[in-house]
Image 1 (cartoon, rainbow, N blue to C red):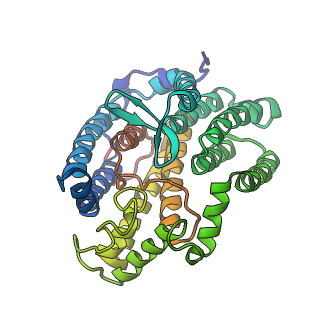
Image 2: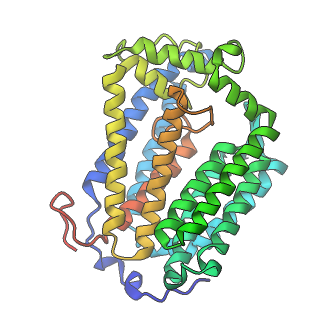
Length: 385
C-alpha cells in the first residue's frame, strides 16, 4: 500500500466545502438528458425491429441513467481520499478482468471485449482506464519529488501501460489502447516526467500503431475504407458512407427531431457509436455545434476543477478523467465525421450502453467530490475555500 506523506487528504470529510461544483453538475445532467432524448430518437426503429418494442432501448438506458445519476451524487459526497487508498486494488482488479476476456469473454459484433456477469455486460477496458488514472495519480502523489528520475518517473507507468496495452492487443481493441496511451502520457506530463522520455514514448507508440495496422488484417481494411469508403461500399465502407449521408442531409438546421431517415436500419450502430450522425441529421449543424459546446464547457470546467484542487492527487485524478472524456469525444466525432478511421469508441452520455453510462457518471462523481475541496473558487462555484 502506498503511504501518503501529505496530510491534507486525511482531513475529515466535514472540512470540505460541502458544495458540489454546480456548473459541472448541471452540464453533466444536461448532457445525460439530451443524450437520452437523442438515443430514443435514434434507436426506436432498431428497437422495434429487434424487440417489437420501439421504446425498449430507451427505457433500459433511462433506468441506467437514473441509477448512474444517483451514484454520481453519492460518490460526489464521499471524501475522495478513498480512491487513493483503493487505486492499486482497482487497477489490479481491472487487469485481472482483462486477462479473463480471452478466456471467458462475450463476443459482440465479431469482437470479444465484454464480460457478462448475470444480466450485466461490460467492457473491462473501461474499468482499466479508470484504474490507471487512479493508480497513476496515487503514485505520482507519493513520488512527487522523484518524477524527473527514470526509476520513478517512467518505469512504473510505462510498465502499467505496456501490460494493459498488451492485453487490449489480444482483444484487437486498438482504440482503447490508444486512449490508454494518451491518458497515461498526459498524466506523466502533468506529473513531472521529463519530456524527452515522453517523446521517446510517442515514437514507440507510433511504431506500435504501425505494426498493429500492418499485422491485423481488419485494422488495415478499416484504414483502406477510411481513405476511400467507396472502394468497398457494401462492406467495409458502408457505415462510413451512410454516416456521411446522415450528416450531409441534416444541413444547417436539420430535418427535425425524430425525422432522421438513416436510422431506419440504413446506418449500422445508429444508437451507439454513430449516434452523432443522427444528431447531425436531425438537429443539423446548429444542433451539433450546440452539443459540442456543451462538451467543451464540461471539459473546460473539469480542467478548472483540476487546477483548483487542493492537493496533487485531486489535480491528477480530475485531469486524467477529464482527458479521458475529451479523448473519447474527439475520437467518436472524428470517426463519425470521417476525420479518423473507425475505432469503435462510443460517445459519452449519448451512446447506448447502460454499464458504460453508469461508469461515466461514477467518474463524474469523483470529479464532483474533488470539487468540494477546491480552493480559490470563483463566484460561479458559490463556495468558499
